[in-house]
Length: 276
Image (tube, rainbow, N blue to C red; front, side, top):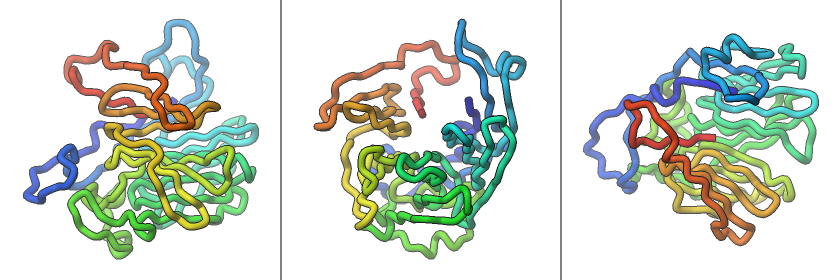
């Protein structure tokens, strides 16, 4: 279980820039919310609230904007805003590391091909990293701006100079991003391919690790976040539509789980935000 104040962290303003994407929300600066935590608990019964979770958990720790979690037989990995934490399965911290270009980390995933390697999505700098958690060294990096995806939603050309700062607490401003990367995922059948979820484009991109080139394999979603490779194809969260959508290997939609009719608090009535 993870929680961060992401939904309360966006400050909006009006803009005179004519944006190419009419649904794009201009953001001046993304602010960190320090009130996040990660907890381990047992699912069952009638579920739980955040208050009951604080009383009934096997482990809980505070983090700043935790979003990514990965678990294997040896380690628990937690991606905080700009830091990777490594715990053993007894919840003892084994290591932590960062990088000057880690900002607004979103997802982290263990490699199915190389034990000890993890794929990291740095949303705030629009970069994908692969790191070895044993050596805490970078193994691989993918930069969409160097592979033809360097035009922002405001229509400007993005260059690496922007990443050199000054940056906000969560990295680049939204109008300085071309994809708004919400996640990076290995293809567990093909070591030469990984997938990137683009919030701004509404797409899942397949990236060739050798050439760096990306192609959309799923498109037309409303601000997607979660992505899972299933035995028959893919599963994606359609964030603004409040749906989970399944596709077969031929990219044909096979199933939709609609969650829009679930009860909501009055203040968010009519708003959908399905993340992972």
